[in-house]
Length: 174
Image (cartoon, rainbow, N blue to C red; front, side, top):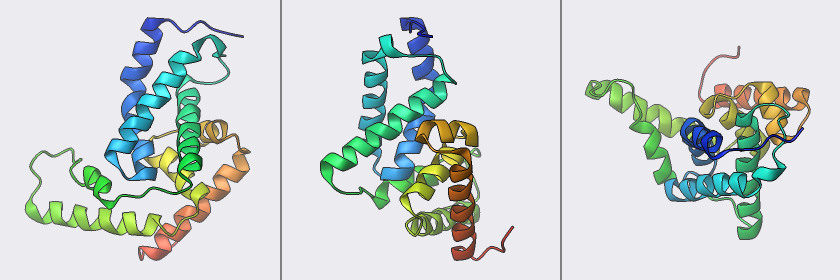
C-alpha cells in the first residue's frame, strides 16, 4: 500500500535518521565529506521517489536501503573502495564525557585505531552488516530488509565478522 510522504514526515525522517545514516556510511567509506555527500544523496533520492514509497516495514529500514544502494552505486561508478583513515578520527572525539581524563582519551584512540585496522580484514558483507548493527543500531531483521538478504545470511555475516574482530583484537571467543 502506497503511503504519501508528506513534507512533515520527511522532515521527521531527516531529523531522526540523518545521523545514523551518516554514521553507517562513514563507517564504510571513512571519509566525512563523502559520507555527508552520500547521506544527502540518500535523502534526495527518498524525496525524489516519495510517490513510490510503500509502507512495508519501517521508514528506517527503507532509508538505510537507499543509503546502502547509494553507496554501492558510488563504488560501482568509481570502481573502487574508498577508505580514508582521517574519517575515523570523528569517532575518537565522540565520547559522552566532554572532558575524559587524558589516559582514557588515549586508550579510546588506540582502541579505535585497532578497530579501524581490524575492520579492514572483514569481508565487505561483514563490514556492512556490522556497521548497520553497531553504528546504526538496526535490528538483524531490519538489516536483512535493507540488504535484501535472508535473515540467516545476515546473522552468519555478523557472527563470522564478530569472531574475526574478536580474534584479531585479542579477545576470547563468545
